[in-house]
Image 1: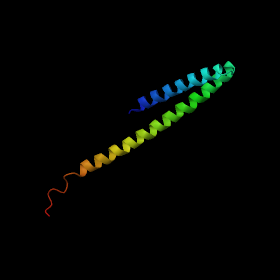
Image 2: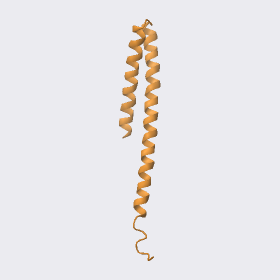
Image 3: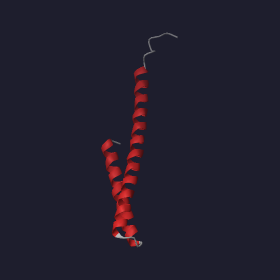
Image 4: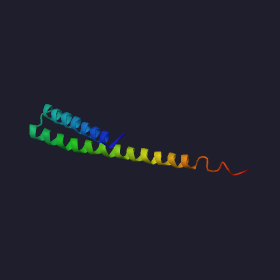
Length: 83
C-alpha cells in the first residue's frame, strides 16, 4: 500500500462520514448549519483516523520488509566454513 493510496482512503472516509453525518443530522431535525458543522467535524475525525491507521500499517510493512532483506544478505555467508 503506497502513501497515495492511504491519502485516497482517508479522503474517501472523510467524505463518506461528512455525507452521512450531515444528511443524517438534517433528517433527524437539526438545522442545516448544525448538520454541516457535524459533518465537517466527523470528516476531520474519521479522515485523520483512517490516515493514522494506514500510516501505522505502512510502517509495519516497511519494518517487516527490512528484516527479510537482512536475512537474505546473511544467507550463504557461512557456506565456505567446514563443520
